[in-house]
Image (cartoon, rainbow, N blue to C red; front, side, top):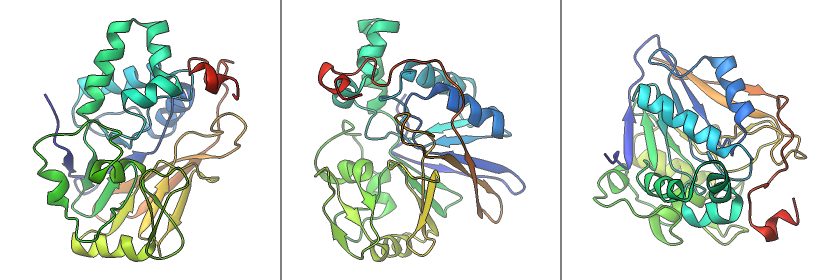
Length: 279
């Protein structure tokens, strides 16, 4: 059963909720998040904001763990699609090869189909907008424009609203500009604030970008990027982070953590031959 493209989450007073960013196949760091904040449950729910697979060599273990918790309890864990939850990216950055190696060709198609039906965004307590990428190329986009789409397009579309949801990133300068990778766009604080005002929201939480501290607060505190893969690509040296919200205030509490020991499997071990040359 397909989930809505925009999912509303309600955190009752006195309860907490954790938002995590990209994990990218770093299974041992995923387990560390659960060690720090508790296993996903109705009492300790999570939202993972895309970027589950690719790059890291334990993407199968990561995605099966997340799916298992989702099957155990729909409210214990929520999953947003990111730009790597699609077949074209998985073919290049390792997930497809890893699935063929650890499971079978049939599972490649099954994962690709499931990824197409992941939600694209979540709204927590009607105030916090969580999305993998970011804002849009035009002003005036309403939550209803995301919520009311009758057909969920294939993730990683290179044009339109879906592309901007998955690929866009914040920038320090006002207005909008191109991204270095020529997909999506960069957007300033004025764009963020207009979107929040138009939709009666308080905060935007994207992921998608590596941050040295595991997070970055931008746009006068109206946007917090969270990235949950510490020491990304092994030499990066960055921290990982997740954001913990507690109702009713929903003030963000940021928890940072370092990489934990893991099995010595080469980065991009299952990626395309060309990319393995540089890993």
